[in-house]
Length: 287
Image (cartoon, rainbow, N blue to C red; front, side, top):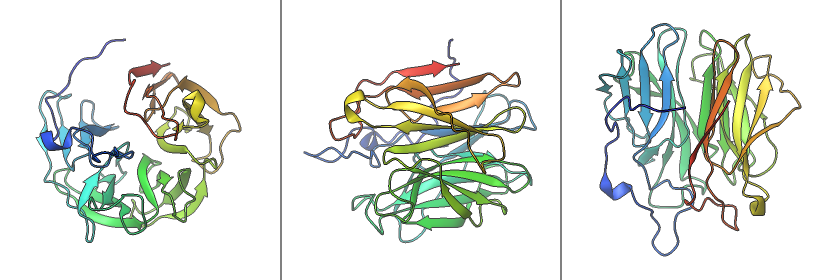
C-alpha cells in the first residue's frame, strides 16, 4: 500500500501550536497542540468532491479530486468557550445537501476536562462548507464525536464522554438525531469500560455500520484498537468484538463496495497512567 499527497498544508500552520504544551507537566489531552487534518469526507453523489477539516478550525473543499482546495471562513467557538479543536471528529454530508461537523469547544485557560471547560459543538453549512453556523451544543458531556449519515436528516453520533460528565467518563456513547444535528436523543452506551473511548463510524454495504474505537487498558499491555458491527442502524450491536491491532491511535475504518473494510490507526505507546506518551507512533493499515 502506498500514499500520495493530495493537498498542501491545509491548516493554519501556527508554529506556536505544533509543540507539546504544559510546562513541567505535559498536557495529556493534547488540546493545546494542533495543526492537523482531523476529518475527511467524500461526497457520495459527486466523485472527486472532498471535504477536509482541521483541528484548528478550518474546513476545505475540493471538487477536482484534491488538485485544488478552497478554504472556509474560520469556525468560531460559541460563548463562553475560547477555542476549537477536533481530534478525531467528523464531517458528514446530509440528505438535504447540507454539511454537519462536530468540534470540541474548550477554554484553554483551564483543564479541558473539568466541568464548564468544554463542550461538543455542532456546526452546519448550507453552501458546501464555505460558511458555518452553530446549530447545537452538548456542554460538559462530550468530545471527539464520530458521525455517520443514515439518510435524509438522520445522523448517528459516537461520543467520547468526558470525566465527571453524565455520559460516564471516557466511554463511547451513542446518540441519534433526526433533524440534521439540531437536537440529539436516545443516549446509550456502546462501551462501558473506562478508557474504551473515541469511536469512528462508517457505513458498510448492505446497511451495516462499523464502529472502530480505542481500548487503552490494561496499561501494561499498551492498549489496542477494536471494532463492532451493527446491522440495524446502530440500535443494537453484534456481541463480537474484533481486536484489530495493538497500540492506540484514533482508528478509522472505511468499507469498499465489495465489503472489504480497511482500518487505519496509529500504534502509540501508553504511559503507566494510561495516558498517551506521544512516542512510538507509526501508521498501521489493516484490511
